[in-house]
Amino acid sequence: MKVMNNYWEGFLFAAIVLGVASVLTYLIRFVIGRFFRRAALKLKVDPTRYNFLKNAVGFIVFLIAIIIIFRSIPSLRDFGTTLMTGAGILAAIVGFASQSAFSNIVSGIFLVIFKPFSVGDRIRIGQLYSGDVEDITLRHTIIKDFENRRIVIPNTVISNETIINSTITDERVCIFLELNISFDSNIDKAIDIIQQEAVKHPLCIDNRSTEDLANGDHQVVVRVIGFTDFASQLRAYLWAKNPSEGFILKCDLNKSIKARFDQDSIELPYPHRTIVHKHDGNGLPQVYG
Image (tube, rainbow, N blue to C red):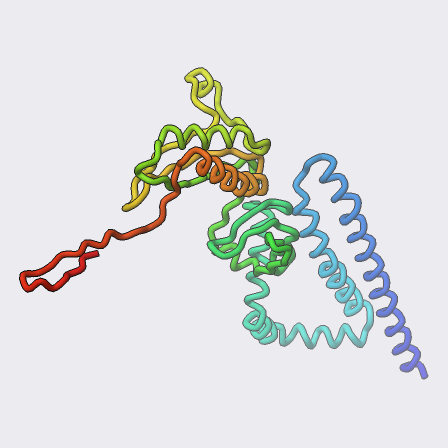
């Protein structure tokens, strides 16, 4: 009977400890999720560390709860001693099986410490993934792409890739708008049309320095960057407040500039070939392209 009572006492103690751990985890996550996030937005502080802490706090609290249970219940204490005896073999097995998970955790810690990006930043990972950072967890980073889909990338993958951050210090972005015009078209007139349409657009900002203004440089610089087999290549340098507005600016100008080019007889060329017909000495036609 005494053994049975001790068993139920131990079970009740373990249940209470786990219950307290669950409530404590919920409360801490609630405080971090509400108070810290609100304070971070109000004070314009990086909220990444709070999200990471929120994801790690449950693991830490329950780990402490399990240690308390094993240390407080005599039967489990003996069992824990047995486990510690074989800890070397167990650690080797767990370490081998979980090396990927541990690598992701360590990479996640490094991402928070060195902060190549933060929650809310617009980034591109390598050449494949682009979007806004939604969350950084112990194992992975969640990115919302431009189609409103979530890309879940392990932290070790991100640590080994080149990261392009569009918002880490300055959200302004320079957009390259490249257009080809035919050799018969007036280059100066085409440049003037591009500048007029760009300056009229409300999303095109003036990024000229004091020195540029003193030199009389135009708000939108347009350069002839080269020639192809059938066209002159023009590139306009446009500035926008952020990548989203820059994309809209580029799309709108493609439409308005095309309309102006059609109106003012500026031709957008297309590839073509010249076919030459000749005859050999026997009077048979020969075709050269």
